[in-house]
Length: 118
Image 1 (cartoon, rainbow, N blue to C red):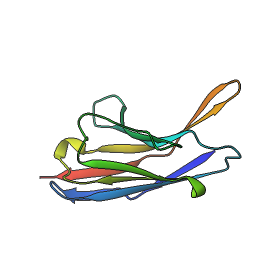
Image 2: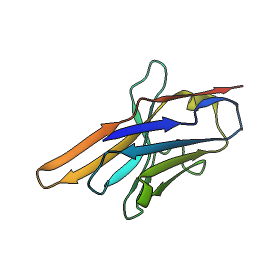
Image 3: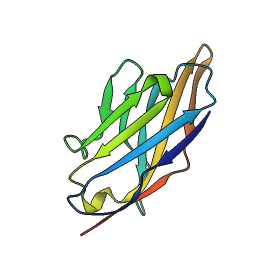
């Protein structure tokens, strides 16, 4: 499975950006899709995920500002980011998880940079 993310860029604090990610090559239903991020000097952290059935999970730091959505039929996932803050500056990674009979396979996109300026 390959993940291709897009939509990063430079935005002023308080602004909005929308990230998109397309998964290809999966012959199975993708259980979870979402986003992680790695800020400069920090470890990668969860931002938001959404299961195939619609259960969402958000980091506390983005609740109320970010929204994750999916198009299950097209294996797409989006991250709408509003009221961006400087601390949201990071490389954002698309994530996908497929649960199989033998376990869980995880996949990562190449990352897209989001820079929030003051």
